[in-house]
Length: 352
Image (tube, rainbow, N blue to C red; front, side, top):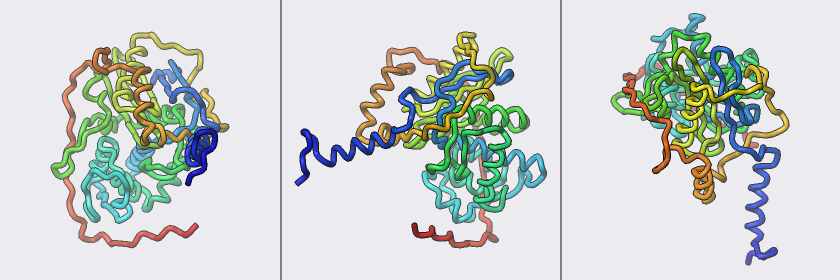
């Protein structure tokens, strides 16, 4: 029988201890938020912008950044073939339906990586740009260091959970601003609201693309460990604003809060004395908060109810900030078999 301790079972105490362990060293405040004037880089609003967080698929912003660099350097072209390797097809949470050896152009792989957030295509793209995934990850961390992303470390090109894949809202804003500044010719990759891969439609999770006028990107992300993340850029009346939200509970919350902050920024209702985004300090004294217990267990209903009370925008009877109706931009992708691809076995993980 399970021994009782002060009315609770030993298993219950262990469960509480596990929850406590997850949050030791993590900030007790709300999830990170950062709003930045994209032209001056002035911080308009921030909450815990330097706190480490799991980026999920916002990681793919760095994957795109390195692909853009490789295009500019002439290492690849938009017509370079990107083939699904065995390692690419072994990635988790696949919606693309692509199998080993299927091939697309590098241009199409960027749309699949950014719009569809295809984890398999992100790995295949990385292998194309840098010959293998490990080399690409080294490039990711070298680029992060160059950009001054002092609170970031990458472990893979797609953002699947790895405790060594972390960033901050501050660093994601720095990255997003540099992607936009350095590669204006590639902004179109962030505008598509869905892709069709061999006839299969995959919609972007960025609802602002079709519901908030002026949106020009950039990337969403979700893991149970991270919650729902967003790095967005929008422009109105000649002004451009970037918003980063990490750890939102639902897609509605993420989309509505992002649109709310953008609306407030464009209306001149946000101001801060924090200076430029680069002046924000990343925190090295805390670990990334793991949201899995709150978002993907039996605790999630109570947590979501609490968050809905904090952020009711878009719920029945409440105002919405997603009022616009913008035509969808659909990018069509055609793949073909690569008869020359070699099926190399994936090395087994070394026993621990």
